[in-house]
Length: 203
Ligand SMILES: Cc1cc2nc3c(=O)[nH]c(=O)nc-3n(C[C@H](O)[C@H](O)[C@H](O)COP(=O)(O)O)c2cc1C
Image (cartoon, rainbow, N blue to C red; front, top):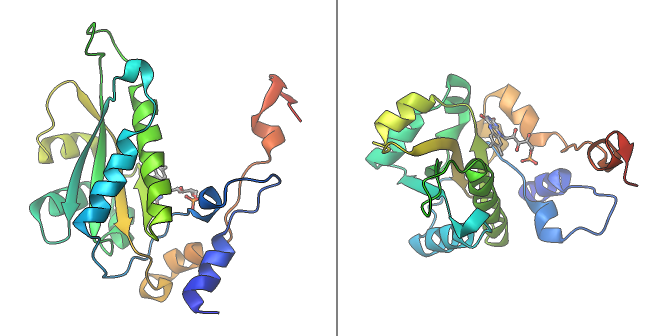
C-alpha cells in the first residue's frame, strides 16, 4: 500500500452506521501537492456548491477564488492567521466564502445566510472528494482585512477561507502539523448530539 493510501486509511471515518462512503473519505489535510487544479474541476466544484439548498432559494453564498501566483491568492493568504499561513501556502488554490446579509425579495435580514453558505461549501467539499481533491476550511483569518483586500461590497459578510488541492506529503510540514496529519479523526458519539428530548439521546 502506498504511503498516501495508508494516510487516507488512517483518516477514514469510522461511523456506527452505514454512511455514504464519499462522506467518510473527506478529511481536511494541511499538506497539499504542487499539482494544479484544472479550471474544469474548479467549475465543477463551484457548480456543486451552487446546488445546495438555501432559505427562499436565496443562494446567499459568494466565493472569491485565487490560484497560486495570482493576486487574489496572495490577498487571501495575507489575511490568514500565522498558524494557517504555516501550512496553507502549499495549496494551489485558496478561496474565501461570503454570505449576503439580507434576502433579496424583501431586504430583511437572512439569519441563515452563513448556514446556507456553509451548506454550499460542504457540497463543494464532497464534490472535491469525488474528484480526488481535498479542501481545508479556515476560520483563522482577519475578517476586516479580508473584506478590504478582496473589495467586498457592503451587505456581504466573510464566512470562511478555504485551501484546496491534491494531498501532499505530510513530511513537508512542520512536525506539529505533520503529527496532526497522521492522527486518526474523531467525532462525538451520536448520543451526545442527537436528542429525543434535550439531553436524552435519540438512540
Ligand atoms: C469553517 C471551518 C473553519 C476551520 N478553521 C480552521 C482553521 O482556521 N485552521 C485549521 O487548521 N483548521 C480549521 N478547520 C478544520 C477543522 O479543524 C477540521 O475540519 C476538523 O478538525 C475536523 O477534521 P476533518 O475535516 O479532517 O474531519 C476549519 C474547518 C471548518 C469547516
